[in-house]
Length: 176
Image (cartoon, rainbow, N blue to C red; front, top):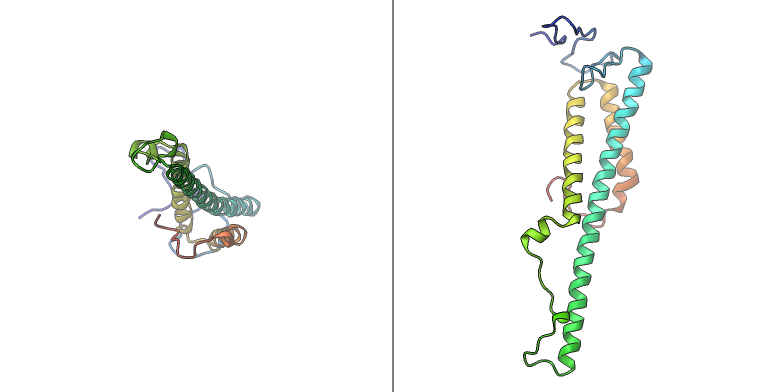
C-alpha cells in the first residue's frame, strides 16, 4: 500500500511519505496537498497554526457554554417576571378567572425555539466545533510528535484560559 501521494495524473508527487508510527520528521502533508511544510521553519509555523486552531476550539466551547447560560438566565428571568405579575394581579382581586395578557407566560412553540436566534448561533458554533474537532483528529493521525504536542498544548492552554470559568462541574463536554 503506497501512502506517498496521488501520482495517477502525474501532477502531484509527495516528497514526504506517510509514516504509520510516531516520528519527529518535519516533512509532513497536513490535511491538504497544499499544506506541505518541507522546511523546519514552515513546519514550526504549521505547528503554531495547529496550536491556534486548538486554542480556538476551546474558545468556541467556552462561548457556546456562555451563550447557553445567558439564554437559560433570560428564560428564568422571563418566568420570574410573569410570576410576579400574576401574583400582583391575584393580590389586586383578579383571582377569580379574570385574565390579563400581560400576566400570562406563554411557552414558546417548538418552531419558535428551533429558529430562535440563540439556537441558530449555537447550531453554527456547534458545526464549527465539530469540524475543528475532526480536523484535530486527522492531524493526530499523522503520528507526528511535534504536531501532537502542538495539539495538546493548544487544547491545554485554551482550557487554562477558559476552562476555569465552568460553573457546573457535572456538565459534559461531549453530550449536551
